[in-house]
Length: 404
Image 1 (cartoon, helix red, strand yellow):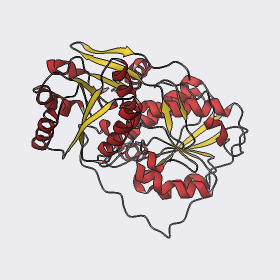
Image 2 (image 1 turned 90 degrees about the vertical axis):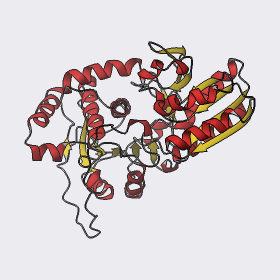
Image 3 (image 1 turned 120 degrees about the horizontal axis):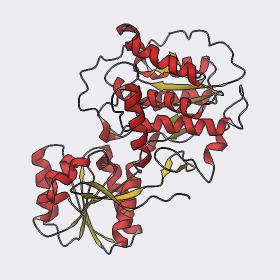
């Protein structure tokens, strides 16, 4: 358990202590990385260099929860639930570091954040967080951990502000801040229609992300008044991808094709798709971290929708200066969760229940990733921009709205 709810000077000290800790203490204090498999916080950010992890020990159903932290009458107790050990440690570390940066930047004296390791059991972490008197939970990262944490938090009337993007875990006290794939699909399809594209096709992988993207695509094309020509699915292999791209290319006349996959797989598929005629290529938020896409001539001119990277670039620069390496893209979620908490804390009396109704403010919230607001299901609805892939990187062709 790591506490980070202190004055800016104390927060600086914590960062220094973590950097100089013994290997064992670093292991205990480090935070988590995103593992592949299913729909998690953001499928595209699985670390390329993550080493093999250690499976967490099984939870002891008879475990006892230790005594709570000392009473704090001046600050709000907020729990940060992230994997501190195991295969997901790097992403968690980036998110946790970003929460510390947000505490420093806001110079808040009203919020104390305590970190709990979900890699050793998300339910156990939630029980301890509740026992310690925390009135709000930030995290967890993985959708399966949200499922484990939710009933414990709900029974204690502690809302959960998760970094997951799995809309199926939202609701009844659980809010998700992750980048929901359907929103970027809707945005880019709508933009394509305004540019005169009518007949749409899609290439999507056979996984949860692909299922969600397909459902959003069908609805978006219908709502935009377009025509759905074909959707082709494929297993995650080069052969299957090429075969599906070839089937889609020959499926009939279409002028726009969505590829709901990583930039690397899009690069492989686009030449095949265009072999039967020029099509406008569309992508999702999975492309926004791959600035090298324009190195492939076939990808130039493609459009994709994502959160704005303008402020994130500033955050990443400050992060590199402080921690000596680039953050994971998801670090912004940690930063923005603290900004949200600090804003609500202005009218939240320490020691009382978190005012959940404040999360449903019609004007929403602002942060590193732009403006967002929660719908009545607890899903963060984000203002997205549309970018075009070019030889020198990405160019914004339709900015994100600045207000609702």
